[in-house]
Image (cartoon, rainbow, N blue to C red; front, side):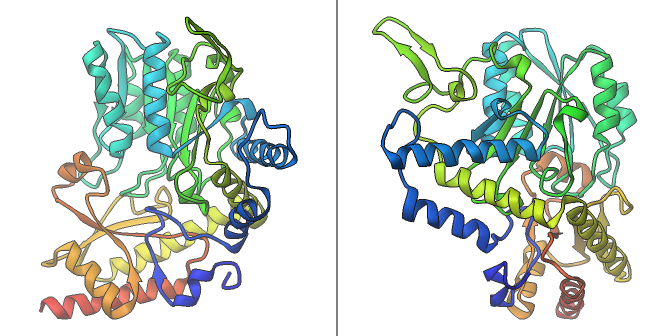
Length: 394
């Protein structure tokens, strides 16, 4: 691991993986090599560099699509999860798949990126319905199923970026499909930690980001089940996504090119594929086990500190993320002490989930999040630092 991840040389205990992950040499070198030896714009170019770049870009699509069990034409490269969900919301509206009078079902667990794009549809006569969580921030899948009456579209996180709860997607999706409900999963936290196969799961749409799974920032994916590809209108239009243009009208290229206007993040796609290759070589089952073991150890260690309050299920449903607060200390002060005195990096704030914070009765929490390069010693260092925080606040 130390040979694979240069950042480990800094000696920082990095527990902010839910915000973004560190990058292995394989990803850094893939991006660097593209710019050094293969840089050119893709598609239409007939010179060698353009042909090479196009091949690298499309092969990257194939590898990322395969990682989630999708066909290459079903994967659209976007700028990230937020971009994907905005694309999806607008396209569903423009295509008439969502229309006035339809109801979208969400939960109070959602990240702002899986809330605001849907709120924007309210002005078009589409209404939102919410499933609440309990006082610990835990979502009950049975409550989701009971709330499906009259719903047209379900958009749900697969793994909470605050509580680490892994939602039972198989159960929820099965119930939704029996009722004819379309399903989108916010996979920003799920895809990096849990092996997902969209074809087996039977969902219609999946959004995710490269930077949360060892890849570069500024690129992500949107899975669109192939039965919607023709009906969807492009979110962006311009160069690169057309078949024929006149001054009066235009026809679009076939998917997925139809949805990728302009020059895409070619090097980002190459880096994304390199990240997927790394995860495959490590093994997603091993990733999930590492995350679960670290989370379990962290929960048990933090439970021993009577001045720490934990949020989330606190059982096998919790993966990779532990949110907590220290009695009498503001989360920002906790993070400052951990960083300056112990070189432990955690995230504090509302985590782009203000409705959930209000449900928990707090304005912010501390969040430690783990990935495959973290160790037991990292958790021990966090606990040691929290004991110092307790002494600091008296």
